[in-house]
Length: 240
Image 1 (cartoon, rainbow, N blue to C red):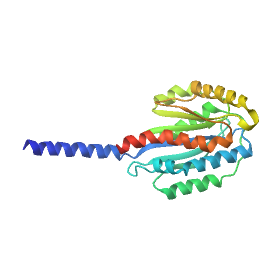
Image 2: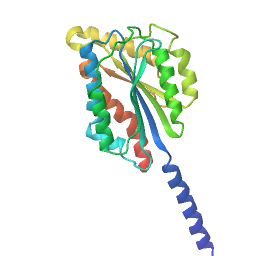
Image 3: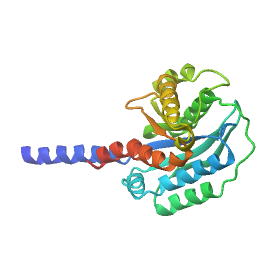
Image 4: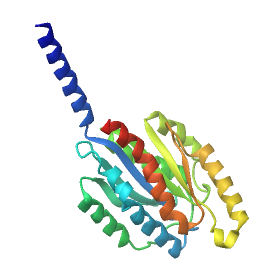
């Protein structure tokens, strides 16, 4: 009888663990792309095409689709001035490669629009957090924000950072520095200063980090590395 009770208890615990593992989603990931005046048409294209490359990297695809019972949801939006944020890809549940192919097609076909030249980074953070509030059933919620400069419009990013973190949202950053081919060693100095700014003003949450790209030509590789770092640890823990 005791063995039977023990078996029933084990089955109940196992059912509870399965229920936890099959939550609505394991991670909501909002990707925010800087399209302010400092980003020219060539750089804009490098950024979008770089994101397509990253989303189709074999290791990234494997991580994104690793737990079908608890999928990742993804959205992409552009940001620049105070009221200039546009959704390119609405919240999409990543269920299979065909879904990723559809997202890639949308990004590849997106044309540069007229955007205000300012860099309202704080407002972009707040808007991204509002989008993530639409995904409260997800185990983890992450805002992945790219930028090539400091905020010069609206409230300072740090005015939103702590409140966003208190809502259970992690903000990671991809900092885009000057092109190494044209700036040389000064490019390294610039990206170091900008990375320090994003660490002090932007990122928040457990294990939040800053990824760097030395020029938009490096964006694809940097975004690929960033997605692997953001997704991999959570995927491994779920598989275990």
